[in-house]
Length: 209
Image (cartoon, rainbow, N blue to C red; front, side, top):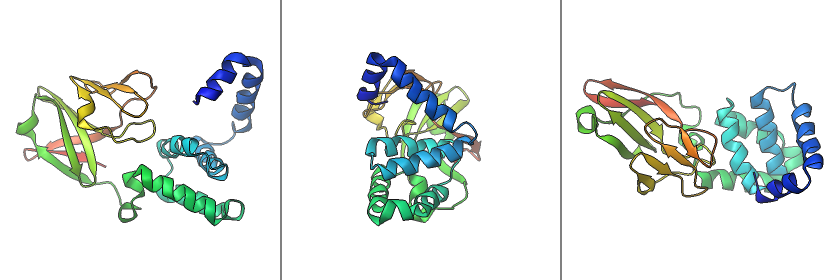
C-alpha cells in the first residue's frame, strides 16, 4: 500500500473505508484469478507502474498462467491501445519473472538438478545461482531440507545471497524480512517465501518448477 493511501486511511477513515468496501463488494462474485486479471488490466490502463508490479505477481499466485495474463492484456487492446500494452510489457520484462520469458511460456514444470546432496546436507543455508534460469536458497538441517525461490513474494525482486545474515533474509527493495529456516515473513511483509517441491534422487538434490 502506498504512503498516500496510508495517509488517507489515517486522516479520512470513513471515506476510505467506504471506498475499500465498495471495491470488495463489487468483485465478490468473481473468483480470485479473475479479480487479479482485471486489476492487472486497470493498472495497465492507468499506467500505474507500482500497481502493475504488485498485481502481476498476485495474479500468478491466484492461479493465472503467464499466457492468461498476456491474453487478458491483449484482449483489452480496444481500450488500452498499443502504447499502453508495450509500456506494460517493458515493465514485465524489467521484472524478469522466469515464467514470462519467451522460451519458457507454456513449458510444463519439471525436475531441475541443483547440487550434490552431501555437499550441503546439514549446512544451514546455501545459495544456488542461476540453475536453469532461477536462483534458489536451500535450507538444510540434518537430513531435512527446503528449497525456496530467491525472488521476494512481494514484487518478485531477486534477493541476492548478500542479503542473508544467519537465517535472516532481507529483500533489499522493500525490506521484507524472512526466516529461511521456516520460510515465514517475520518483518514488514505478509507472505512467506515461495517454496519449491524438492527431493533427493541418486545423491542429487532436485527441485520442481
